[in-house]
Image 1 (cartoon, rainbow, N blue to C red):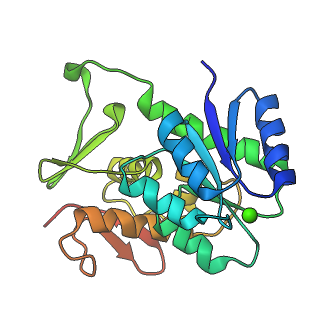
Image 2: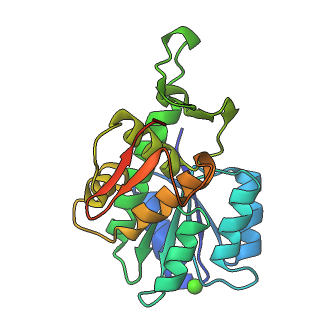
Length: 235
Ligand code: CA
């Protein structure tokens, strides 16, 4: 079955360009020109991925993002931002977007990024292993089932976005090892260049909010000053 992409973008030329190129790449594409319609379509159509512009009429991209995550819709979101929207970009990531592209971008970049995000989220969702075969990774009160796309903390299921989940799996698979921001960016976001590593910091802080008692004194995900991050258990 073809994967369904929802494009929420109010600039008609960009909307059309994205639709054309994503369809050429084999995706089914539905589009919205404003935030309210976009949010409705996301709920009704349950797309596999959303390409979301930040500046939108009716309801802006940040609110769309926030609404989706609050209603536990964990559909991957690729955010589109203007070049000088540094603040909005970080805020968008904080509100649960998985990745972003800065305008102007080439359609090829968008398609490549969409494919990369889908490849990764499918890798974790398409397998349906038997309960007995499930590999679990455990550190302290944290237990992750990579094949089942589930993570628990103190016995409670964690609500994680696809990128948060991948990051957690990667950290726990490399427990005790210091991982640089660039390493994490490469591993989780498929960036084959040195990109903006704040995307890593924002996702780390999200994970901390979900698994640390005190995010200022993290027990699990530690910051190694000048180097990066390391996942460790309680001592
Ligand atoms: Ca716009």
